[in-house]
Length: 287
Image (cartoon, rainbow, N blue to C red; front, side, top):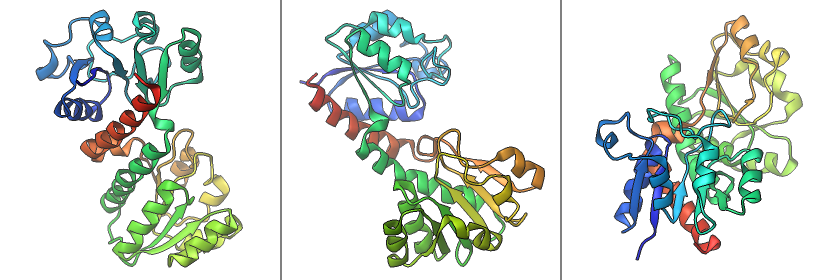
């Protein structure tokens, strides 16, 4: 027998996730999508939506203002404190990117909760649609092919690894910046050009596209001066990001902030990643 789930707010990923859970034989309540015609009559009230579920699944990110659940398709705001007050200790709340304040409130109320965005399997599964979406943006924003272009990837974490491999497969001249000696060795071993941070000024002037995956300012005003005005810079890092966008604008450099790509370019795949992660969490929480 399946569990009862409430999908509480979110974007197209959340709706795809609801469909996947239903296909697995679970009962699913959709709440916070009344701006969409097919759901406008299904959302009764928050109390009913919360109390219905064994597991409440929040969006990614869970909130954009720290007050309300991130629910762009809801006609009325869904207050986070109201959700917490309606929950019982027998339920679990699983969401993406809880703030420290929300984690503290959940702990204080002794409510079961988990942040699926913190899970390693989620991050790995999310890297593929992020990389594909990044390459799509580069193709749309540049007047030349990725093949044979000089491309720099800043950072060699999960996304950096997947993105470098895809770019190399397309035929780009892939340069990858990393700090650790072991990463630089792997970069060279995989057929890319390794770049130390101190070498960026030397390599950046030759780049056609630069992707940043590091969530701290890397391309500051000084390094941006090294970039050709025809180069496109794409920031994939979570806030505050890695690019001084104000300086880039002043210098006439095209800089694109590309957050939340999995939900935009591949919501079905992103939903499958969330589903797999949620099932792992539920098993561990023993809901």
